[in-house]
Image (cartoon, rainbow, N blue to C red; front, side):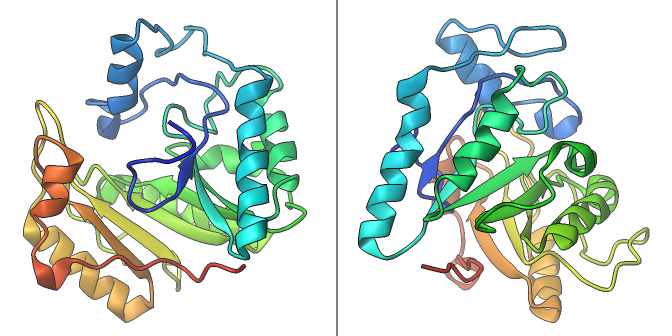
Length: 253
């Protein structure tokens, strides 16, 4: 976990810590919590200690940055697969350490994702030295899209950053012009992914058809990750050819 990743829309994953607390139905079958428990951890839930890491772990992105610089092409880094960067109980000093690391790695593009975009206003720096951040929010259904997208839009716009929505796990229909949305714009990028694993809640094909049409109308780049199956790989294999869309925002070298 880190140097290479199975997540199809990024190159690396980096976790400044492990652990989180559930905030919505999208957390019900959290793969990260399940993995933590399988390896003997107990870092999920309010009041539970988060797992922190040492110098070797924090040095990894510096090596990725050097490789990307040599290649002349920026590398994508998803942060975080085993945490929420806006966790209310983030370990003291670790979020600030992450901001410093982002500023020290100009050849990486950091994809920050949260279910708590309301915290961006008070916990995210007003700017990053290299602007090398894509700012995201998870919106698994229309109520959460209507709630979280305006907060994400405000935070990304104030900082001049690319905005993206992770519509995963897709638990209900999402339209980019929801009834409660009055914003004239849509996210720069949207990732669609149905739930996988035991107890998965299947997504409907119509949800993807509708949001695809919205993306075409708004100019939002669309990345179709998977349909519902036992594993993400099996879910990806279920995507019909006409929906195998894997767009990304423009990546600067």
